[in-house]
Length: 70
Image 1 (cartoon, one colour):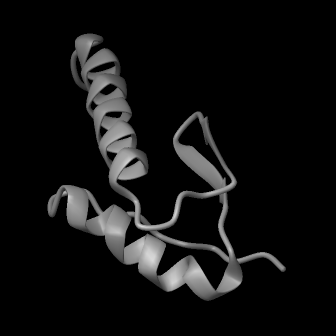
Image 2 (cartoon, rainbow, N blue to C red; image 1 turned 180 degrees about the vertical axis):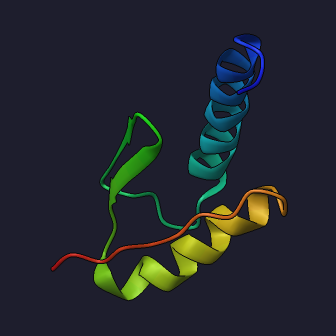
């Protein structure tokens, strides 16, 4: 299963990536909510692809997926 420390390290790494991504985003989401192992954001529909590419450019080893709900 892994070390109990893994959860803490993972949380710290993801927090850092999210902070970098949001601080440098070309167009900031209206809101961003991390939840357990997901994140939820409100982004203009025409900006989804650009924002998704931006998130994935922060750390090439960590890739975000997108589920669009209209």
